[in-house]
Length: 509
Ligand SMILES: Cc1ncc(COP(=O)(O)O)c(C=O)c1O
Image (tube, rainbow, N blue to C red; front, side):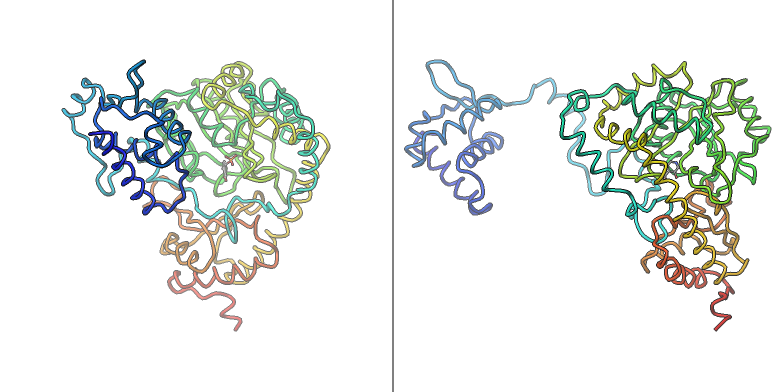
């Protein structure tokens, strides 16, 4: 290609680009883009000499700086090469032949419509995903009332820290997290949750999901198995399976995990339980089952993971003491979160690990996730040590107790005692049992179309065929005055899917 025709060629392509993109791109970016594309589509062949920047600038009627900028960028990215004393040339950008030959042997081509090249684990994660796209509104389970969070106090503490910049809060943190926060959490857990710990055993994470992920990676190998409750929190299953741990579902009854002789013959590496408030059904694990589990784990080299996600909110009595506090064998890893007590978007949780694991877990966290958020952790420390955390929990306990009462009232109004309510003594949700003939998944879908979010109980079980039917209702984020109207709508949907059912409201009319 002669130099004069190269100028014409570039001008034509610049004009074409302008027509397509308007005049939005800076002129130097336009030249850069045009030459780059022409090299990639081989309109400009390797080895072709480019005119000097001065000449091209004259030809294109542009400033020399504009052309120099484009040349410099293309040189830096390897599209051009300059040969001393000779000028600037199109570089040879052909891929390495060894690589192209290997690629030709197994032609891949673009993905066909709908085809995903996910791993088996990735595919399973997506297929079995439980997370809801909506995270707010009646009756989204497990979400606290974030509108009641004391923003002003948090803002004041935040300003305090941002006013004086501290490099140790802005750089990466150690895997274990900010020491003053770990001390504050240890103080809190010893008193409020009867956890045996000191700050050296505490690690700060982004929440229970991350804590469980770390436990699974650090304590199990691919193909090991873990016991999970049946039904259980969908996130527990997803996290464990995504790192290659096989989950074995153990049924729960009114006392928690109900172990069968055949289960006991195959000790798992990890046992995940929610002893203070079984998720999703809400019962408390009995003391004899707690003791048996601790003994079994110690004797069989298993680790117990205690997911203590919402025990701060217990309405009729004091919060149930942790399982970890009973453990004399140091086999329990206690997982907690600020997602329910403060707000989920904070993404701060903590784990208490046996002393023997503390250092390796801190290294593991740091290696996997490159930790930070020290500023947030410093603010949270003051929030706790100045007493705002405890007073927020006290205040919200009253708010949620009233919402729970209103929800009970609405359920009873519509269904008398024909619906069994479980788990309504603690936390931010309850479960409504439905007859087997009710399709709880269809009810949830129909409710969603009327603006009400509920989750099907059957989805929390390992086997859909034998799963109990029911609905999970959260009341934490529903203002008092919306509880009754929202439940009225839901009651209508349930009734429409409940063969032969008549609501109390209808009978009253
Ligand atoms: C039983 C249970 N564990 C863990 C979590 C998630 O906790 P985090 O937000 O700390 O990851 C939830 C959230 O709803 C939950 O219900």
